[in-house]
Length: 357
Image 1 (spheres, rainbow, N blue to C red):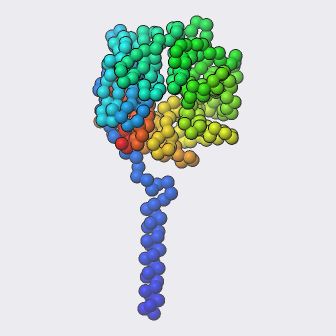
Image 2 (tube, rainbow, N blue to C red):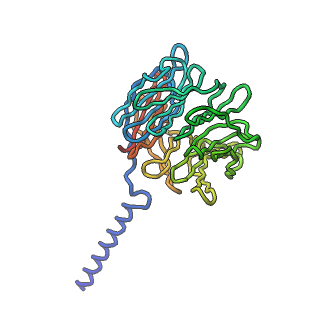
Image 3 (cartoon, helix red, strand yellow):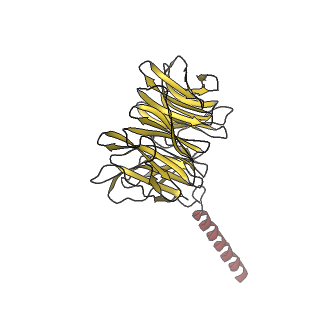
């Protein structure tokens, strides 16, 4: 009898241990929640607008935008060196009216689009300092810019309509878009012979692809009644498109992925009407993007890994009434965000946060 009682007690202990272990570790919840930290940023003249953030690795990231000066908008440029943010005021036109846009890395150089008092140019930062590549003509609207080894594009409009300007390293040419394209909303490239753009066409939103010879319809089966916010190209050949689909007047975020062959795969992560322009591939292999926060004093980020979407918050900020990360970049083992924060009683100024590192 005593032997039987001992067996029963052992079984009970084993069952309790198994249940406790199962409760402590559940699929998808085993990882420690992400922890974001504040990175101080030298102030600019508020209100400040952030355009872009890009990183080459842990020791080099650039953030661009513009501040409000007495004579209008004035460009701002910040550099991250893996230790701190500092403001760069050495680039050509730093004190002139204008703004800075997208940052791209070409070889060992950083290329940045610069609207300099209405005229477009590309700033190039090398080991020897700054230089510029002026555009061949002035446009009414400079919509987007991208650059890779051997090629760069600027898209916009002038008084004659749509313009696609291409730089091959020695000079500029104008490229023709398909006849049904009304406006190009964005452009990105993987190589000099593999560039993608999203457009407003006579049939709605469309995606174009440059193959080194011409711009053609990429035949992407976008969801009906949708638009495109961004296209993420990766060295592996994977393409991810982010945008919104409108159903009964309500926007719903969608993601489309393509491995380089086969069919496109469309998902609708629980992101509401989040604008996906800032979406990046994180060091952990997941997609990351800032989302509208339900807490005025904290930023909020979404992590999308396959069918799973999780959220994390930035640090609490005293007296903050609006914390808005505007751009994300992967720096190897960490994520950087750059944006604005509005403290009660003041205008929006700059903020930055880091995950990992």
